[in-house]
Length: 289
Picture 1 (cartoon, rainbow, N blue to C red):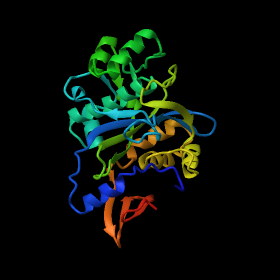
Picture 2: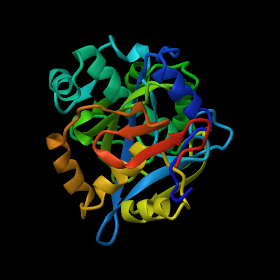
Picture 3: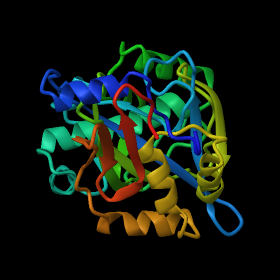
């Protein structure tokens, strides 16, 4: 492997089956992930976690806090600050209830996996330290899905700060993958007074790292990552501060990136439109090149 691109061993067979019409694609589940940024000297650092090697999907790969949408976040009205649900629906390309659920997923998963909460008692404030035992008890209930995010916010008297998020890009897991996600990537700045920790049972390590350093480590084959992770890291490199990245987010294209696989000259060609660096040529019966 020349770089750290994550590539499951079963993909070539599944790609060929899809190309031959014998594989029916799984419907992707909606998900959200957050590139949490904090300023450092000359460039923001991003919070990343390493998925446990035992994980069925992308085990050992570095990623951002994130996860699937909770159906309970669709309908219940919650305390909300920032752009309206209608604005988010237009931005994300979904209906208003789905927009609420996606934004909730982004905020909830960041809290569940990094201990950082983008919410406050008023539309202009953010909670401070969330490492106390009572906060941890609520976080554990959220992880177990014994407590919905709306119930959590109500219990705490908090409003979700949607204005602290910027929608950055959208990637859909390839049609040949058995676990598929339609994932919105967001950017956010670490709120003052809060600190990250490895709160996820799915990760064995967390790091704060500059996007340029993380991408370079991937290029050297030192850090394993999926294509959307690498692509977003490269996109963050030009920004000097977290605020600059957040300011740029509303102008970014959210057209979904979906990998395409085709049979060509006796091999399978796997490509992500607009991201030529991830193209793979897979000989029949062979490994990716």
